[in-house]
Amino acid sequence: MDALDFIFNGQRLSDFGFIIASFGEDGDVTPGGISYTTTNTPNSDRKLFSSIKVDSTVVFNFSIAKFDCTRQPEPIDRYEESAISKWLEREDGFHQLHFCQDDYENIYYNAYITTTPVIIAGRTYGYKLTATTDNKYAYDFESEYELDTEANIECSFIVSSDKTGYI
Image 1 (cartoon, rainbow, N blue to C red):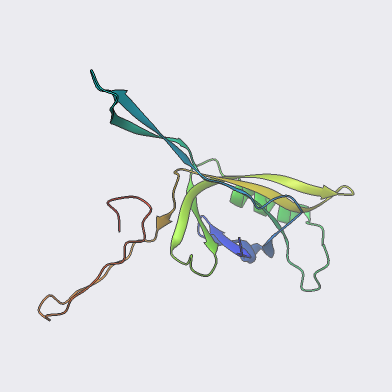
Image 2: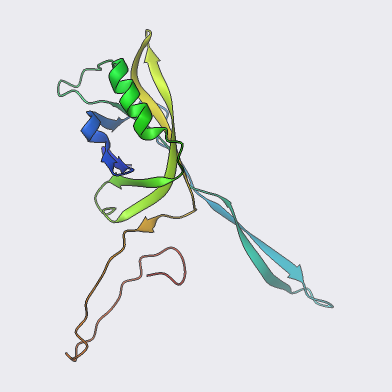
């Protein structure tokens, strides 16, 4: 992930004075998976497709730290800890998670986030975050286009969805 900032539930990480950081082992993404159910046809080796089931969703593991222009680690005070906890560890379900990164301007996930403090010498210096999404794919922000059907112009739609039937 190249992003340094993200938006969760309408608020930017940078508004709290934090950036996406690394404490060594984080940064992995577990992709979602699907299972297919098939049935045998009578008197044949052929299988028929019956159904599909989403087994798991996308899970992101990444860290955040307080941003300091001097690039020196700075401990997080109790007021900042409280603000970050209230913002990220919500009890009201999934919220939009959007990473601020080139080529992903319109992509978001519905996710909930859990935090684990990174404590060094008794002080909190950041958080390891786990964002669990509600699906195995991301969403695109809704777009609205207006076409002039009177003009005899050919228009192409670019399908960017990972899911069949969506644009």
